[in-house]
Image 1 (cartoon, rainbow, N blue to C red):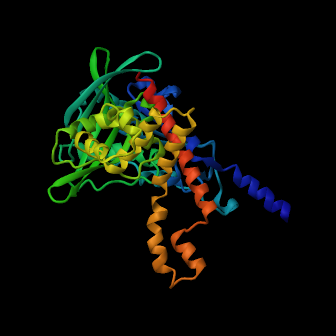
Image 2 (image 1 turned 90 degrees about the vertical axis):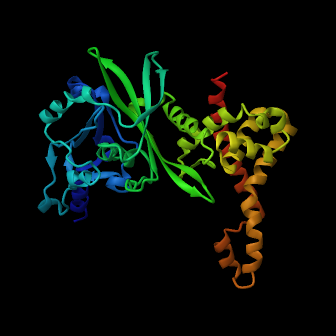
Image 3 (image 1 turned 45 degrees about the vertical axis):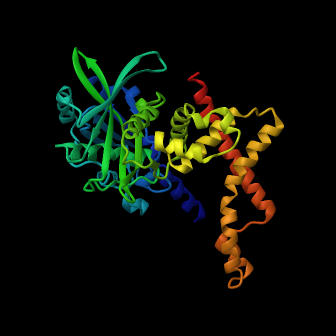
Length: 409
């Protein structure tokens, strides 16, 4: 009996597929791209669609294709497999892949390949929505030059609501904890990045990425923009486009006195690293962030100059200070590096200091175990280890930023 159960389990395993392996995206510019496997790219994650295990059940040799025309983003969906599990035999129904994906795909996605090919013929008629606010040329690692343009758009732009629905269909595959935004809220701003290229003598566009920003009210009469979603699509990654997109947005903000500062919503580790690089690159030009000033410690002048000139929050100004102070620190000099380490750890220790008063208030009403659970209080050796671990994590992140800054010199 045990052998039969094991055999059945092994048989069911054959019908499991890793969603990240079987799902393939493609940005199609011309009919030849449809059959070109080198144009395909996979998702970074699929747990927000197919569950934490990122498994699709019920098929052998499963392929899930999601192609988009490169400019208009007309989507084409196809699923294929060599065998589908028998429900009566397995006792488990196969996942309804199209139904699951349809909940995330834009309306009116195509399932006929000939119709998708016909849609490609309309690509050269595409014109970006909104107002062009930046343009630049970048070199790929292979030495090829590519032209890019950034457009600022509001949702009221005719046709953009539908276009944005197609744009955001990527986010759950590339941004962790992503959610679709309420486009009816007029406080949202949109920034769309395109590659501009020529083919057969005709000017064309291909979507490279986009960013959304929400404008929060800041008392009494200012606004605090918060960067919400930033996505550079895989074919355009590792080119510095995310940093360029952030800088384009910054440039737009600098001259607006109504903007208090710029924040970011739950940044991923990778995005925080790019943001740190952009902010450090800009701050190192400021008077208060020069080496001599950095070695004196974090100051009000740094906060003021970073906020008034670069719209940085106090929290981000402090982070950039630590990055640039590390650059100004001779790490082979034990005293200099010790002073740096203690300075960072003083900042990391602030939550423990804030908890001290709360601890004294709750001490009389809670037993020791409850108090520990409530405040996350630690023994001294645990606290020291926590501070050291966090210092090392920050140090590692800061060194990545400094390595990138070094390429500018």
